[in-house]
Length: 304
View 1 (tube, rainbow, N blue to C red):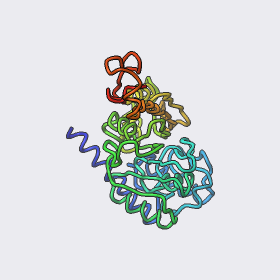
View 2: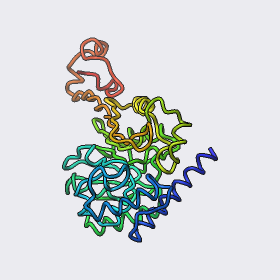
View 3: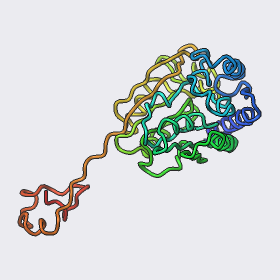
View 4: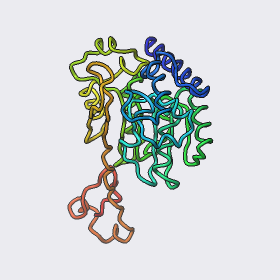
C-alpha cells in the first residue's frame, strides 16, 4: 500500500508539472509523462505543421484538425495515446465523463459533439490540471462542461449519472484498475458504454517486461495486457468488450481502443392499480394467476 501511495504521488507530481508547462506555453514535462520529452518536443513541431495524424505515438498529433479550434494550452497538455471522443461515437444530447481529463482537450471536444443539450464532465486528481482545464473551458466558451477533482478509483458522481465514459491513456496510471473499471460501470446508465484509449500489452509481455519498456508515469509499466483488460471488464459487469490495437508505442506494447457496454436495466414489473389488486385474483392464488413477486416488484405489486 505504501508503494501504491508513492506511485500515486509520483503520477500527480509529473502531471502537475505537465499542466504548468502547458500553461506556460510549452509541452515538455520532462521524461516522466506519457511519451516523455522527445514526444513533447515533436508535438510542438506537429502543431506548427498542422498536427499531421499518426506522426507521433502520444499527444495531440493523434487528433485531427478539430483541435486547431481549441485553446493552445489544451492542445499542449494532451499527452494521451488516442482520440477517445471519436472512439466513443458521441451523439447529441449525451452525458459524457472523461476520466483523467487533464487540460480538458477531450472534455471540450466531447462538449462540442454532444451539443448544447448534452453535457461533459471531467475528473482529475491534479489541482494544476483542473485549473488549466477550467481556464481552457472559459477561453473556449464551453458552457456545458464541468471539471471535478477526484480519483478515478472513486469517481465523484452519483450512480447512473452518464451515458458514456471516455479516457485517454489514464487507466494504465491507476494503482487499482479493478476499482476504476467498477466505478465506470457504476456511473453509467443501463445501456451506457465506454470508449477508452489506453496503452495495452500483448498477452505474452510479462509485468516485468512492461517495466523494462517504459516507466509507470510514462504510461507503459502499469499497462494491462489485452486478456487482463477483457477479464477485468467482464468481472466489472461489462458486456461486448473488445480491445483493438492501433499503433505500437514500445515493443509488444500498443496504443489501443477499448470498448464495452453496460447491460440495459431490466424492465421493472408495473404495480397493479388498487382496483386490479382487489379483482385480478384471490389473495391466496396470486402466484399462480398473477405471477410471482420479484425484487423489482414486491408481493403487493405481483398482479401481472
